[in-house]
Image (cartoon, rainbow, N blue to C red; front, side, top):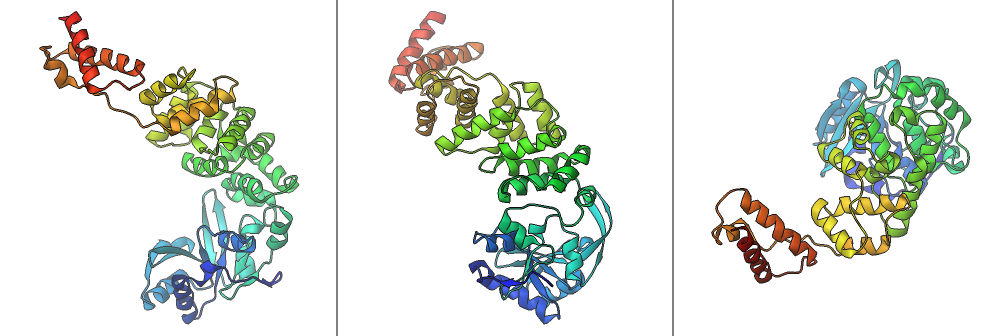
Length: 406
């Protein structure tokens, strides 16, 4: 293999559980190397995310080797070469070297191989095709190390072929460029993404939202989204009018106040239209809670002119929805003192109305709509008192209101 270098062993590589997995595979006559994000993180001296291992052992031999070592082995995807080892509560994904015989979107028919170069050649991006042995020796046959150092994100081999194999790679390209790229994006990757943009429309909602929320969670997702719009990709992800400039203004506000929320950022991309929010939520297959929040964010903001108005909104619709309205209104150039409103929300703990239905009935009011009407009236008064009226004061107000209705 070419592109070899040795790195200082990161602390995660010394984990006893990982060493047990490596020893189990090597004892069965296989070679095991770490691959992907963990290796990239080690090269950049960053903490790893998920830790994946590649091996030249076929899946059934991997299963047998793990079990002989007393480790739990889960056949995550034997047909595609993936086994998950569970050791000390940690899950490690082990995948057999493979080549794609036939690709069709998310799925592929694969053949297992002992050829590390062939396995690297089928991966998506060069910076994801770097392997590291348990001794810290790094193997790179596609120029991933040089690309990582240069801030260059590009596909392995022919870019058009890579995205034709799986359109999700288009979204991954923009995410990785936003995270690791410096300067202008790779021309071949941009051309391939543009030419195959329509394929993104065929991706499932879950795959789109999974990748897009990763992009929206980046420190500054706006440049990546602007590039996606330039390549005519964003329109297949958000098939409604979108506003990257509004998102950029929101991100700047979030940075000032140390905040970040991908769903709120998605709302900033969309017009204030509940029907549009529902449409996107359906396309992205969002959870019920996410859908409800996105629709709430799309509605006109409640009054937020002063501290009481902010507290009133937080009491009625919740802290997070109120916080979103404060920031989105500011991104639209409306609203008042953002810092003051956020400070009110940070200090807010939703109080409980100090009177209940039993208190109303104790005054001789019979069951029925009158109880709810009285509670609503005393609640409105209590809110106007800045939520500070005591139970004694609230009961007194309730008695006054009850007398007027009897």
